[in-house]
Length: 93
Image 1 (tube, rainbow, N blue to C red):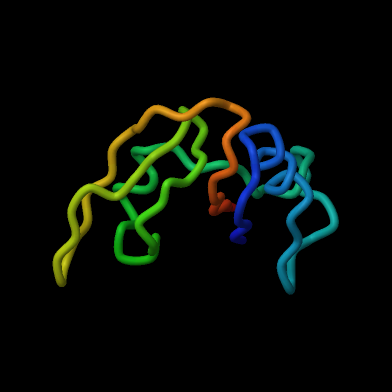
Image 2 (tube, rainbow, N blue to C red):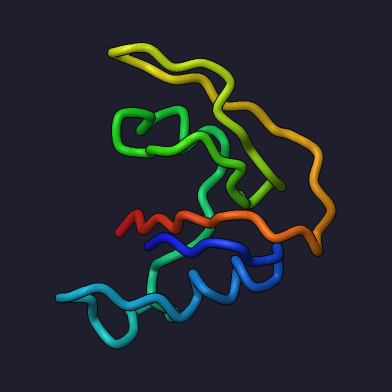
């Protein structure tokens, strides 16, 4: 799921209510399974995590600092919690 121009609180809320085709109404452990990614998770899936950012993550804001045909590098960047950034939610279930 992707949203544009949301503050940090809105980003977390967007992920918490996101539904995709085929998603269960609620997982056995509660919630919908969608959440803000960590920087480590983004770096593990750089091929599928597109755009330059900045994006909200569990740790704050990240921006892509380098990209080539096979990989990309992301790092934390400063952002106020009320800044309007993009968000990409992930689901690990």
